[in-house]
Image (tube, rainbow, N blue to C red):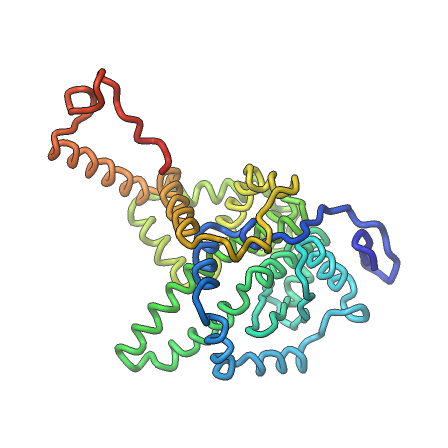
Length: 363
């Protein structure tokens, strides 16, 4: 089947699909969230990292997972779920994923999807998700999972599942439970950022921003599209970020800590912001990081970019706690200036000629 053909509901009839741009040789660095990218670059640079995790594969339930899905789910292909099969092939072609991962549909009313595996990623979508999303929304969801595969997230996702189970088993051991829980918490923070990366990959695969955000809205509110509105859903995200006081800010942190995924309103808002960014437009214009240059990527530069992103997030955030952080940082800066004889304006020992130094330049 050609890339611009797809199956439609109701039979084998094929209709021309909307043409989508392809990105030959695209590196996952092109769409990864800065925090996700810095962690992955550092891990990829570690000598013997792949060898260590392959050695761990004997301890992880990967074989069991594969057998489970093979025996108790439906494998997507030309004769089973051909529409999903066409979407999978299309997403792999758009993102230039060298090997198409096996994909399964599992019976579960909850809308969900995942990409797991160490040696070879596998994609699983639930019947709840298949029945919930329309054609373009599902295309973004499949592209989301293909993005996980291209980034290598499946390896770390599998380890997170394993460690989560381990944390429960060793919870009765005081120090052991604390150590594993700390690792799981850190992995969850990384994985929440990896979900934002995969959302971007889904947008690149489907190339329909409204469909991507509409799919997230339906995951949150169900199949009642005539009763929902994407713009109102995005307004919820704005209200969530800026609303409440410091107590609410702390509750937000506590609510998100046990989650592997960011909240859906936050994901939709983040995706909208990225879809309107220069980075997205440059990728669509054919200017993007390529896989052949991955080996030359600087870990230091990646961490610097991640740090800059978090700093900018604090500066731009409307959350009360982040506002307090900015106020404290500004107060500490003023206090430091007074202690060292530097104050605002020329009297504080600033540059000659009465000109204030510009502190807004990125470094």
